[in-house]
Image (cartoon, rainbow, N blue to C red; front, side, top):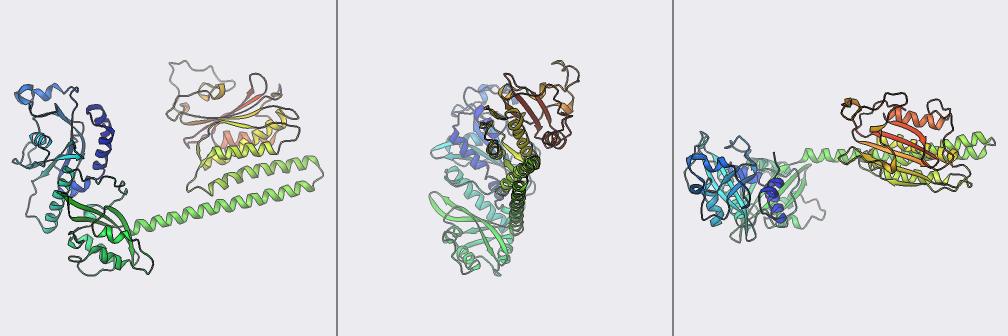
Length: 557
């Protein structure tokens, strides 16, 4: 189904500012549907150049000339949004978004558009076998009419309305008038909370003085939970709420103003362990404020859960912080022990252990500052690269650098990748660039996330890579096995212009502990692929390719 934005841009002459107004209206018109017990359908005029379906002109046995209303300024209408009520039966069980009709098919819409007024004339329609009362409300922004809301009420279950229903209908009528006058949605009002109160959660109607003229049973119950035992009708809502929430501490000055109906806003109040969310909508008809609607909802359980989640997040961050401190302590102890050793091999082994522990500590330090388990790995990579450069021998005049971006990675990928990157950098400094000038670069590239696949710095990506001893690559027309189809992946290249690989080098049979660690982390733990190869122009390239879809499977080296 096309979106509201697509329909407006493809079929109308409305501007981006008009589109923003319609989005604000549609985001909040569930309120109008529930108060009206009616379906809402938003029609906007087609641009003149748009072609209409031929069947729309011939339906009913009449030609196009007989259907067109010469007094209208538009050739037809397109439905861009639809809303059904939660308080009553729907009049249109089928989706009508995207439907196009010619001028003359919806006479009430044409009249509302031309005369810029709410149109309620006409008898109920029986087109779908049930009686439906139609009304049309022009949607206005400033001096411009953007479209028309068709309000359709299913009359099949009509009965004598109660006081609650009468209050709902009167409030809906006032909101419809505000829409036709360009006063709703309120210009400049911030978007509503995702979980804004709905009509069924609790509704109160206020007069101009801010006193309650009607409170629904759910609204009365919500205030009883706050500690107000009597009827709200006749009471000043702002003062009652302020007294209930009076804890002796300074209270927000705007609370009384908002709950007296003079300002549109959402607030939360707490009393006696209960938390209630309130939303005030001032009713301004004909330029005069006649009262307000206040919606309320008990959100005690939701807020307690939110607080529990915040507490858990804080606990997890504190754990990462303590793990980082412990790892740094271990690294410091290993460093002290290394200084006391007189055996060079033992000192070198402890120095390697310090670097490995330090790379893991960097990840936990980053996790201690984030509310979730996602990490901007660029910062970690830069710190690992800097650390590798600092611990290199004085004879190795190399300044490592990074090209490209790793982006945001989950902790389960970031920790082994940081350790593997540390090992590869140290291996390049100790063996490829030992006692010589040179360059050492880390290249990062992500692909398979909606962008075109490219080769980072001329390095072939794994979609074209064939394992040693494997068959020749498949022909372009041959279908790739499902398990080998590329998903989102991260390719990291560690390249140096050093002495290059030994002639008999084999990563699978190497005795280097560091390379064995890298192979275990990348291939075994992350389900990635690892390739050592000569660099064009001299030196070595190590290509690490890992999946980012969390479906880590053992890879191949």
